[in-house]
Length: 196
Ligand code: GAR
Image 1 (tube, rainbow, N blue to C red):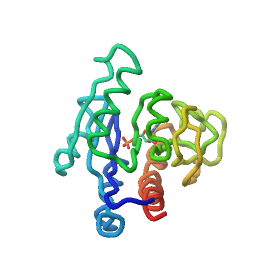
Image 2: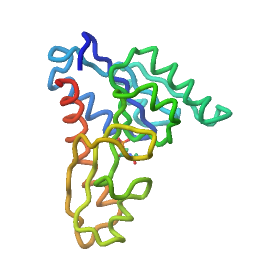
Image 3: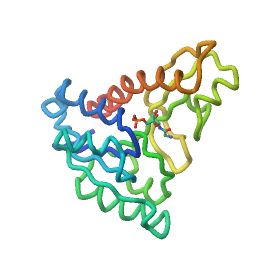
Image 4: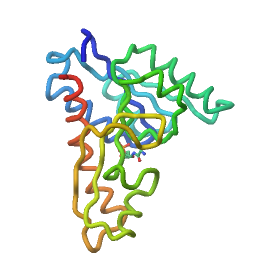
């Protein structure tokens, strides 16, 4: 990935634990010195997102755009693009960003957009992945980092982690086990992209 400054913009909707893992890894592994890369902004579609407060405390530019205030998906995505583009991003990282994106948005960031999904894609696209994996009797579950296309939870797989499904798992216990691994593979996949 060429360019001197590699600005990373992270989009969140909730607790932002993947965002925090990425920021912490970027500092620990000196992405700024090694790749000219840093997390320059965190943007949420929910004003109350816990992750926004974390970004604020860590002096990272942050903004909330309430999707409910826009008349259409296209109008929201246009506003979101304008907010993202102020930061001249090299990578736009979806980290628990719970919005379906318009094809126009996906095209605008072609080659720059990545996501993490809490399943072993291509299995279990969409929501309630852990509950569905348990109900199907899966012995293994996991998470996938992938490039984003206009098809939901598709796109080239960049990294995956596998965890066991234990006999007494609930969606909550399995989700916690998967999340721990998300915090490993997401920063790792991004570092790989930065170093390519
Ligand atoms: C993560 O488990 C992520 O994989 C999932 O939301 C959670 C966000 O947690 N993403 C999706 O389900 C996207 N379809 P976080 O806010 O603590 O990073």
